[in-house]
Length: 362
Image 1 (cartoon, rainbow, N blue to C red):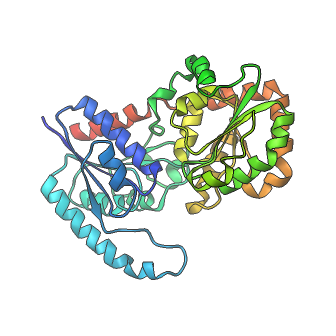
Image 2: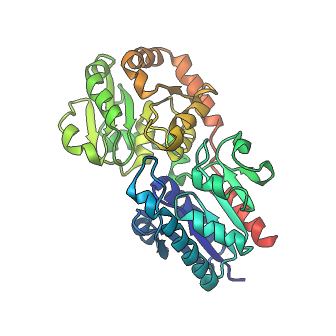
């Protein structure tokens, strides 16, 4: 039988990547299947999804602003328009299953799909559920989550703990250490710190790293510093003999393989990747995200003694002290590595698709 899947998720890479990963796995299992993505008209999914080889339709939808804003006045109109267009898309495409991975566009599409009796599955990446998925939780048939304790947001009988889709090239990074050393031209006798602030960059992390360069030098560390697109001009000349500044890291598998220690934001997919990588991690969550979900993601790991966590507001007094203690204790490094590896879910994409298959057979 030729199945049809409609998939919606976007606004950020954190919603788009899982949507594409799920589609790719479904395509492997059902080579004849037909796929249609639905996104928000002016968001990055309109570019990223076609790049991945899938057709996408845009809805006129955006989120509610947290402050009083003229944009909020248009929200009811956008919602009504998107619900109407979603219904039209569903009638024409006739999907067997509707899948949502969060983001504005998945709200109207999945709501109308559930209303029409189409089997629906959503995937929640964070430890604190997003507003769209919370709204849809009572209406859909299955909810795949990445963290324990999600019963506080969703009906417990619908929840399946699967983890987040992760890049499969991270499954065996230990075999790539020599390749990574050569790729980044590193010195084998020195320990390596990898700094990740996301594709656009993280201002506070970049400021911290710049200020800490003499400290890293004193600790005999070499640094691979991914500063992000917004900060390329500011930091590109800050590298010395032991510091490399990169706007992007195209070979994340090799960056992870090269690292002995990692400093990172705590977006849902980064956290899932770092569990798989299994190196000692210090999370510095962004405080500027919806419902402070990065801090909650990082706490879910640090509370299991599987990573360190320092809030941006506490960096000044705590960073050098905590990081020095980590460098000085091989026992602590080993404990963090072993504990974070226990939280990895390498088969997340396959497990999510198995739940979709169950909906097809129901």
